[in-house]
Amino acid sequence: MYPELIDLLTSRMLEPQERDDIARQVAAAPDDPEYEWTDGDAAMASSCELLNGLVDFTATSDKIDELHEQIQDMFDEDFPEFPAAAITAAMDGRIDLTAYFHWLDEELAQRAVDEGGYEALIFDTGANDNMSVFVVDRNDTGRIVQLAGQLGLRIDRPAHYLRNP
Image (cartoon, rainbow, N blue to C red):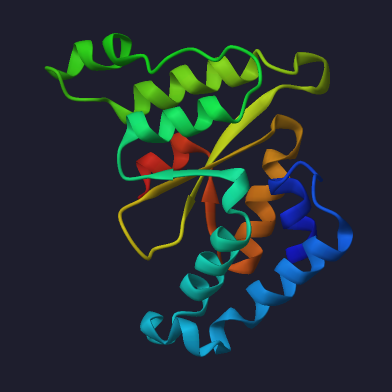
């Protein structure tokens, strides 16, 4: 299941050998001494290894504006700046993550429309306070969430994740 998940998270951009190498490393992570610090949490070890293997396909930060900059960098064409004014007005100057991800979803849906658009998925490794986001083909989102659940990984649509952190 890891190879299929990796294919979907990377929009099938990896060569089969590279994908399979990452899948093997993710599957072996719970027994890897490098992940002893997870105290036997196999899902956390696998999640961290998956994030490490797919670092070029994720945006990761503990600050939403920095996360947004990384998402901007994923697109060759012009992608809007961080919408601070639109997502802080109702929150007395605080950023509303739900409003941000709603705004982002609308932006991503407008890209690659002929192929179905894009969607952001939050990936929670459980290891720290960083937020990691994959931007994936919208048509693949349901399958990604399903596979992640079967593998014990926490990957979900922002609206669902933010309700159930």
